[in-house]
Length: 415
Image (cartoon, rainbow, N blue to C red; front, top):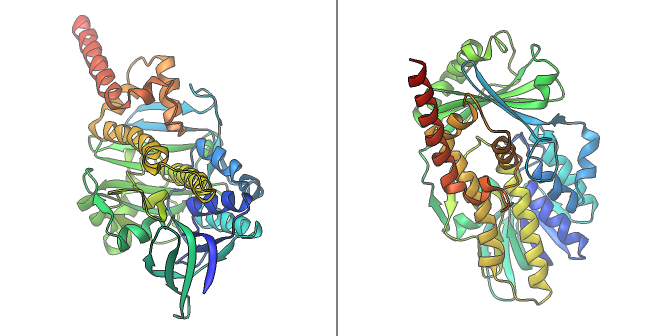
C-alpha cells in the first residue's frame, strides 16, 4: 500500500495550489483526479486576487507563456446603461490585472507544473471510499482500467470541485439558500469585438435582474458566451441542441449584433442547480477547499479565486498541523474562508435584488465608492479596511435605498 504525507483529491486550481505549496515545504504529496485532462470547465474569468495565490504557490510563472487574454476590468450593462470598473483604479493595493482563460488549457498547465515540482499527479482515478482517523487516512480508489488501489496519508485535502468527494461520502452537503438557477453556454467566433473589449468581461443584465449574459473574450479571437437564469428558462434555452440559446444571443438587442453571424465552437452546454454549501469544511484528518466547500453563483467570477485562496490556506494549515502545532480549523480556516464567501454572498444577493445595479447605474456614482466596490470585484474580499467589505451585509441595500430616494427627489424637483 502506498503511503504519503498528504493526499489531494482533485487536480483543479485548488488542488494544484495546495499540492504545489506543500511540495515546497518538503512533503510527499499525491493527487488523485477523477477526470482525464485536458477537460472542459467553466469559470474562465479570473480575478486579480488569485494572482497572489498562484504566485505564492510557484505556479504563475508556468501560466505566463500560454499568453492568455489579459483582463483589466469588468463592464456591466443594462439596456443603454453601462458601468466599467478598471482594476488599476481600486481601493485595495493589489494586482491590477489577471487573465481570462480556457480552463482546459489553464488547468492542464497547472497540473503539469505541479507534477514537474515532484507531486505525483494521477488522472482517471476515482475515489470510492475514505476512512479518517487521528493519525492516518485510508483512501480506496479505482484507476482508468478499474483496478482497485489503496493509499494511506497523514492528511487529506479535498479539492474535488463539483465532484464533492468528501461532502458526498461523509454527507456534508447542504442546500443553498439561493433560487435554483442554471447556465447555458458555448464558445463563439468574435470577429466584431474591439481591442478595448478584449480586456474586460462583459455582463448584460435583463429580465428585471433575474437573468444575465456573460461575454468572456479569449486571446484566440473567440469568446465564451453564457446565459444565466432560473432553471426553467435555462432548460428551455438548452432544448433541441441549444436552439433557443443560439437565437437569443444572436438577437439580444443589448449585444448590438456582436454575435449575429458567429459560428459556435461546440454545441451549447448547460449546468443546472450549481449553488450548494456544506455543514462543515474540516474534520478529523481532512479539510475541504475550492468548490468542495461552497459555490454561490458565477455572476462575479469568484469561483477560481475561492479555489486558489482556500487551496493555499488549507495547505498552510495542513503544514502547521503536520509540524505538530495545534490548529483551530474552525477559527483559522473555516471562518476565514467563510468571511470571503459571505462578502460575495451579499453581492450576489444584491445583484438579483437589483441593489447592485441601482448603485452602479446611478446617474452619479461617487468615485471613492466605485473604487471600493472595484476591490470587491477584484477578489479582495478579506480587506477589512474597505467599507464595502466590512459592512457588506448592509451597505448595498442601504446605499441603493439612498440613491433611489435622491433620484426620486430630483425627478420630482424637475417636474
